[in-house]
Image (cartoon, rainbow over all chains, first blue to last red; front, side, top):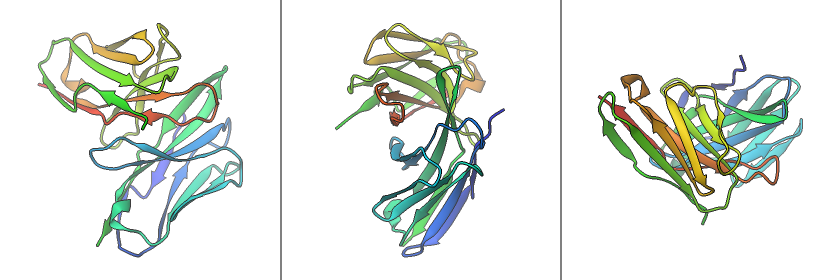
Amino acid sequence: ILNVEQSPQSLHVQEGDSTNFTCSFPSSNFYALHWYRWETAKSPEALFVMTLNGDEKKKGRISATLNTKEGYSYLYIKGSQPEDSATYLCAFCTTTSGTYKYIFGTGTRLKVLA
Amino acid sequence: DVKVTQSSRYLVKRTGEKVFLECVQDMDHENMFWYRQDPGLGLRLIYFSYDVKMKEKGDIPEGYSVSREKKERFSLILESASTNQTSMYLCASRHSGFDYNEQFFGPGTRLTVL
C-alpha cells in the first residue's frame, strides 16, 4: 500500500513568521510530486510540480524542495501572511503498467494569525 | 480563466436515493477525475476517465458509477445512496498532452446522506 504522509497536520503561526512542512512519500517508482493550496470554500490550486531529485521551485514567498532518494519534499513559506491560511496538499505521482496514479496526503492546515 | 464547475456546493439526500453529481470543465481536457475527501484521509480516487466514453475504476469505486458522454462533462452516480457516502466530493480535470500537467479542481460538493 502506497502511503503519503504530511506533517504537521495543522499549525498556527504569527503574521511575519516563516514556516515549513513536510510531505513524505515512497522512494521507489517516483514520477512527480505536486503541491496544491486549498483555501476554505475554494478549489485546490496547483502550486508546484516537481520531477527531479534536488528540484527547487519558488513562487513569491513560497518555495519547495524535493529529495526523491529519501522520499520527502519540504514546502517553505517566508514571512507568512493571513492570506496564506489554507490547507496545503501534496500528491505523489507514480506509474504502474503505463498508467499514472496520484496518491494524496492528508494535508497540512495552516492558520496565519494577524 | 480556466474553470471546473460542480453542479452543487451542498446536497442533502436520503438513504436509497439515486444521486447525480455533475462536473463540467471548459479547458478541453481529456482526463477527468472524481475524488472524495473524508476527515483524516487524503483525497481518494473513485473513478477517472482518460477521454470521452472511457472510464477506469479508482481506489474506491464500490457504490459508484460514472458517465462521460461529452468531453467537458463527467458525472458521478450514486445508484443507491448510503450514509457512508456522506463526504466531500471533488472533481478534477487534466490535459493529457504533457505528462507532468497538474490537475484543476472544482470547488467540491458536500453531500450528506440521511
